[in-house]
Amino acid sequence: MTTLYGIKNCDTIKKARKWLEENNISYQFHDYRQDGLSEELLTSFVERSNWDNLLNKRSTTYRNLPDDIKNNLSDEVAYTQVLEQPTLLKRPILVSKDTFAIGFKAAQYQEIFC
Image (cartoon, rainbow, N blue to C red):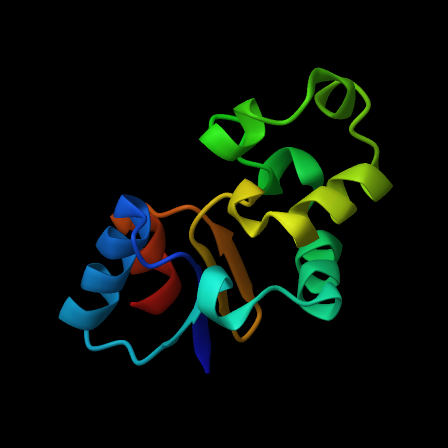
């Protein structure tokens, strides 16, 4: 099963969902705001990537973090902050079988699914 993680009003999520639907790829959408972000799910993301790839440092949420948090962003602090504010994660995150992809590029999805 393919799962797409993010928030439904994100433009990049909309593009990824449109691509999946146009290419008849069945998927489940997990909205962090509605469905939440569990410790187990976040741990699985961190095990498959790293904070440099996972954190969306261009997001408003990140920019609004206090400087003392941004300047001391250890694994533990990042973990706690993302659980409190899942919009700190880059979007979308796609998990399908052995595939883990962050962000959306049509060519990347084409390579994964076709």
